[in-house]
Image (cartoon, rainbow over the protein chains, first blue to last red):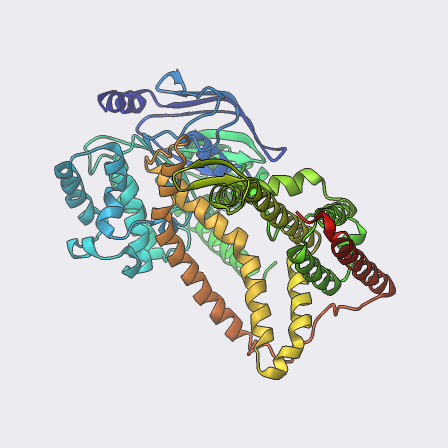
Length: 305
Length: 274
């Protein structure tokens, strides 16, 4: 128990490091020579088209892919392998799968929330405290604790599923499209909660988050760093500003959309023939031209051109 | 190895063989007759002949024999239990060992071997049917064979739809099991690999969420079927109707002939009765 706790702390300080990772699934290469280091306390977003290898990469980090070549260092040490050279699940990493509400398996909300803590061997007092602390964060009421999770609404189920991963206070939290199929308000709310948690809102210490999303606006808004996967290659691992402002050619190359704000900026630059700073955006002639071009572009898109 | 690799019944293996091309109705009737004959078998030569017939069918299917025998592995405990039951509790004159209520007799051992052999032959023959026939074609064959029953107000179409849906959802349900197991492991549950008993108990907490999600899926499916105005399925036409060709009929005759030969061998050489 003590040993495991210590390991968690170390992992938080020194991060997660992949060197020259290659993965083949069913004979086809899915990840090719990935080098990636997650900075402790940062929010890294992983983007790329469907089939680029995002899910495989995060599963590998969680230890769900037993066989791969390359080096995976956890807390500075190579990840533990069993006698057959297979990697085990890494318990210190929290993992929220796609459609988290489908991962609910216990009979009451309380049991669902406490599962990870029980598996870890926490005392019932610790568990009760942790549950009381996490419920308000996710806007869940105490009355539902003894209900079946099946009776909750769709949004509540998803919040419950994510809360039951967060409650174990993982050093690294992996989120595989946690906001898919949510309405805009719930999406914002969920992201707000996650960011507050990542910045140390609940446990008083900054957490590391690895976030997969198809919504490029969310990625631009929340990420410290962005990793871009394309056909199994890691094309970029930059700060969000660098990738979106300086290297957006990489996004275009891998078929990803640009955030609308960046597109607007590019359009402005293109029309005015010079690099635009926020102050020059206010110049009347530029502003009118941009408005006109932007509307024309939107019209084009609406008509499917 | 995942669960689907081990599955025997309902697993179709794509090959280009005469058995694969044979009309499903002929195959179903043939299997039924063969099973009845095997059940009636009484003599040693009858068993030998039936074994030869089943082996020939397996070889004709061009599916590696190893596949069939690997499929028997999950059934091994059942077969061994059957054998033990008959050898230790059997009745007979020639007593070998007797301890308490256990009586091991020569007759008992022979009886056990006979029954296990019978079960083996029938399973192998049945897996030759499912291995060479697409599940949907199989269901179609069953439906056409049962068609006359609809005169007696038996809902044959609904029955066949039920079978088709059941077959279709086997992989989906396996996937569901995999997902719940993964979710539990991701939150710190360590499955124990050694002890078969604890491996079994690991499945019990999975059952409840599995039932729930399956019921939910069934609900959605009902709506989808209703939404497309499927009705009760009566009077539906089939995209690829089954047609009996000359080779089919010839094969049918061949099957009948070999079953007749089996019967003759069994009855006429009954002096070597086991």
